[in-house]
Image: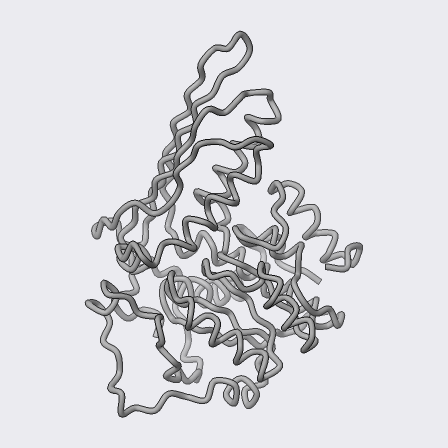
Length: 331
């Protein structure tokens, strides 16, 4: 049986563009399920958006309302994006969510938007709408917010979307492999560069604290001992546009105390690398709504996000997610 889910989105950058284009793409290509777990589970092209175009999107008659900016626009971002005049009133977000019958709000605000993310989470609580947090501000992974959504009978999942095959899932899987194969890891780093507004925004170093925590904790959780590591965005390279390049280095020792070095480079189109994962998260959350499940969605969060309530290896996270989809696991 096919069921629709009504989704509201905070933020209309490359990730929102990829999500909406991808949704339209798979509507027209029903035999193609590349990039999503399965086809069935029980202002997009305006600059500075620069992700690749994969399909035409028909006019959707969706109104883009002015929300509260708060800390959503950093110093560098404000150089590229013009904020509407203060005389233009901001919308009543809770009322819009109610009037539109939205079931889930997807948070795609820029990295570092702590106040703004908390504001939109509060609007969801007021409107009776579930919350999916795609950015590294800690909502679904914090007991305070978990309890708030539980008390309102609403689901939440997050935090910080993990790409289909991105730097974090690759790095954490490699660390787990080293540990499982008996290699003692001495040190590791992950450097990331890109040319979209996400990386331009992250030139504001003060906006990176939660991002570094999110990515580092995902990798560190895969080793039973402390590993010296440095992980996070490194620089903006404009001509890369929406391509993201990551470099991963792992040094360790195996049998006989012999040294081992791994150096890896990965290049991806960033927005689409997370779009399929987010479609899975949205559909899984819709199942939770239909089943009356509230509070943090642990399986969805562990499978789809870098900083979930409970960290686990990717293989276990996928098993738990599929068991949740099949109704064999409560959350």
